Length: 256
Image 1: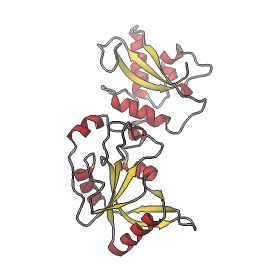
Image 2: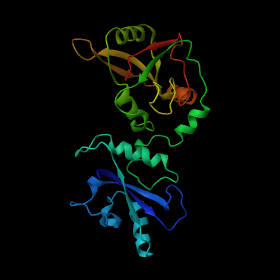
Image 3: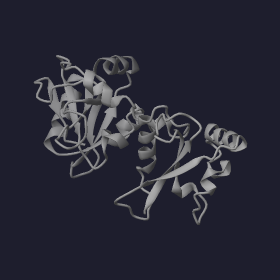
């Protein structure tokens, strides 16, 4: 049975985020000594030194004689290679569990655990009359693996470089002539792609330019405008709300 992620479960508590107790740490197979012996995963030394809270919890449980349970997360489609998104998968898993496990290294890439509940209360917010750039997330990276809790990393991954011809050129001309505009990254919302509806806002920034990065003008770099106060106000208004992709104030970039 192929697996890359394992769970440490404290059975001394009532069932909380697991039927057998409380998941207090989500670990990676790649961080265990080879050959992998799951009995060693229940030893504090198996947890990276940076994970001090989980190490202390495991040591305390061992001292108290609690038999910590180790459970692997099986995978259907697995290749023997570490993927760049695996850490984000662990971060997403941590964020969706309540109470959240003690993993410390992944806090910066956790997506909001309450995102599904947030969708239920999202309302439609009109775009600014001065216009806004709309970018739809599609791409191979599932929304749950995007760094939604880190606006800087999200911009770099989903917005900073775009492909296209006419749309980026037209938006670049508009920015050059009219000044900075908000850029809204929204979910595509296709059937079968999860709980997020189309137009659900994943991130919003102020941008000042879209310029080509190659001679063929098929790739373009999006540059942010340094205005933290305006960006903060935009996030309070639009983040995790809905926008209308057909709003006439929207300028379309290609899908991410």
